[in-house]
Image (cartoon, rainbow, N blue to C red; front, side):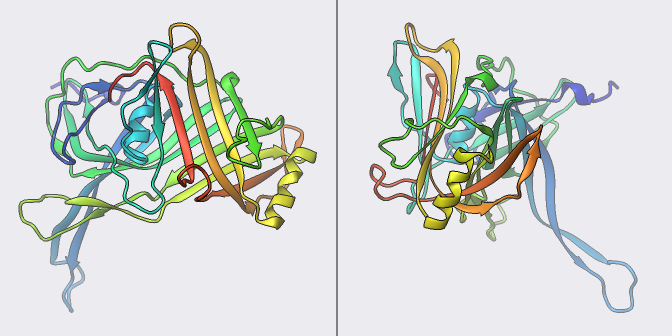
Length: 330
């Protein structure tokens, strides 16, 4: 019997119509990976007088998966749709370019996309349904754009047959030379004041969902999900010069600032002028200050901002994301 090689354990996904109902996993990612792990929470009992447990009964079983990879103008579409909210139809710009918009409601439930996730190769494979991105962290620096995060899912089905001939989105990584950061005093002025000495930016949205466990013998895993209090933060590692130390004044005043992180590819998504791009706009207040540090000879300081709701920003929001690519559907 051939061995199950770690090298060939590919991952492919499909967007579910009904959360938890299996679909063909017809998309194979090459920039961002998903690594599932079986989780269980058994009930154990050791009676008085016994050294060892006499009963170990299966209780909850589910999947937790790590997400890691390289930021992509294409593949992030699926992860934002599961983490933040299912986007509406994309706006067509410049013939073939599609702009996908993502926002999270500050005081209402978000409808998100779930995935069927298959992993494996020709020797053996498994899958899980109700794949739901619960955390995503994007780190931007001059080495590249790193993606990290987590996903939950219903229990694994083992020894499955992989969906054949999945398609792969175009490989369009976000290059470090594509990146810019702005910080402005108003949402209307976003994109006006470019920061010149940001060493690293990290945008995080986590703790988004919890599974719902019910007494129902027909359900082998969790039944649904519910939103939890999210952790939404943005960190800027800046040179501790006049620009970087301006945040000290904002911290003391409790001022809301608006930060834009944008990647603009040299590759066109449109026919004439529209490039592939990722734009993350956030309303922020300074929540924590890091120690002064040496960063390759530069004296630096890290500012941690909480991403906050701003009722005066449009109809009210905490952040807005635009992703431009050629994808017409999930």
